Length: 262
View 1 (cartoon, rainbow, N blue to C red):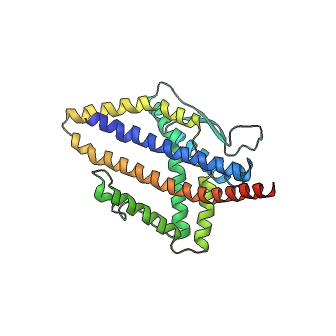
View 2: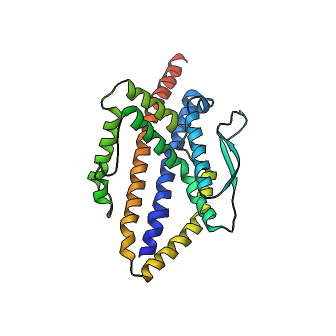
View 3: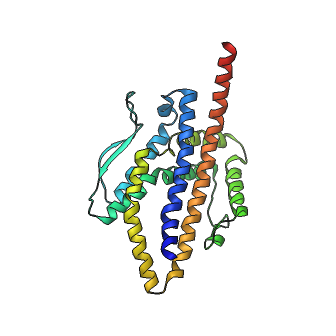
C-alpha cells in the first residue's frame, strides 16, 4: 500500500499534472503564433523561453549533470527550437539518472515560482499554503471547497484592486506563460528516463519504513507533495488562461476582419 502511494504521489500525479499543464501551454504558444506570427515567440514570449531553459539548467546542475551548451534564445529562423540546454551525466550514477525526472519537468515549477515572485514584488501579494488553510489539509486530499477558495484568492490577488500594477503583472504573465509552460517531447522523454531510478529509490524507502514500522510517518509528506502539485498546477492554469483570453480575442478579431474585407 505504502509503495503504491509513494510512487503515485511522487511520480505519477506530478507527471500527469505537468503534462496536462504543458498541453495547455502548447495551446497558448500555438495561439501566439497564429495571432502574431512565428517571430512573436521571441518578441513576446522570449522571457518565457529564457526562464524555461534556465529552469532546465539549474536543476541539471543540482543533480550533478554537466552542461555543455546553454542557448537561452535561438534566433535562427530555420531552427525548430526556441532555446536549448545540452548536458550529459554518468549513466552509472543513480542520483544523476534520477535527476532526469526533475530536469524534464523543471520549467513547470520554474515559471510558476518566477510568476509568484513577480506577483509578490509588483502586486505585493503574499500567497502561502498556510494562509490558504493548506496546512490544515496536508494529511488528506484537497476538497472542492478548498480548491475553489484557492482559485478565488489567486484571482483576487491578481485583479483586485485593478490598477497600473495589475496591467504590468498581466503583461509579464503573458510574456512568460505564452511559451514558458510548454514542454517539448524531448523534455517529457527526458523526464521519463528518471522514472525508473526514482521508482527504485521510492521502493527502497518504502521497504525501509515498513521494516521499521514507520509507514504512517511518511503519509503526511506524500499528501503535502500531492496537494502542493495540484495547487501549483491550478495556479499555472490560471496564468495560462490569462494569456489565452487576449490571444483568442485578437485571433477572432483578425479572423472576422479578414472575412469582412474579402
